[in-house]
Image 1 (cartoon, one colour):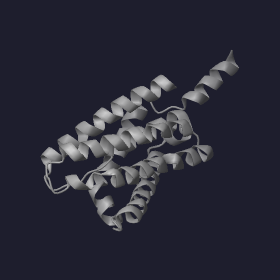
Image 2: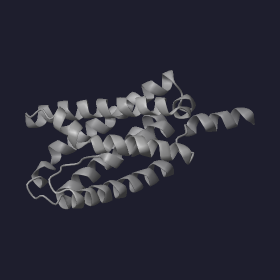
Image 3: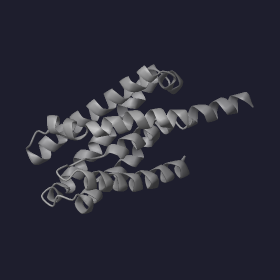
Amino acid sequence: MIIDLIIMGIIGFAIEALGIYIFNQMIYATIITSSFSLLMMLMATTRWGWKGLVLAPVLALATVISGKYFITNPNFRPNYDWQLYVAILFSLLAFAVNIVWFKKKNYRQTYSKVSNIFILVLIDIVVSQITLSIVYLILKQTFQLFAFIAWNFYSFVVLFVGALALRAMGVMIDVEANINYTKEML
């Protein structure tokens, strides 16, 4: 589990940084946040449940560092500070909603139907963006829900398409449940 989470953290950090860099090279006036981090959080909570939330601080840091140095519009760079880090951290921790989801529908039921994946991803993006907006409001005295949703529609697409691709690759599994099942079979 530790090795898997470390690998996901390294890959997530690198992909988030690269994603922000590439996206901001294409669109100058943007402030995109946490697109690939959301996908990594979905994968981590699917694979490891509550323990997958340990990736949140690393992935939030990737977003803030990337924004500070890769955003092409220098007017947006000051937004990437400790307050945005805290807001993004809480938004990624909001993926705890997946643990509740997987108690009602296990991962096999969820990833067997595209409609279930779509609903889970929609819940994830809405809960994370509302959390991001509320924490941002508390810290910055600015309510940005609609702006965050508009800016991060791209995140929803990345999350949904990524979840479908990872499902097809057989990555979206509950590792602990599979280990316990294998132990029972022996």
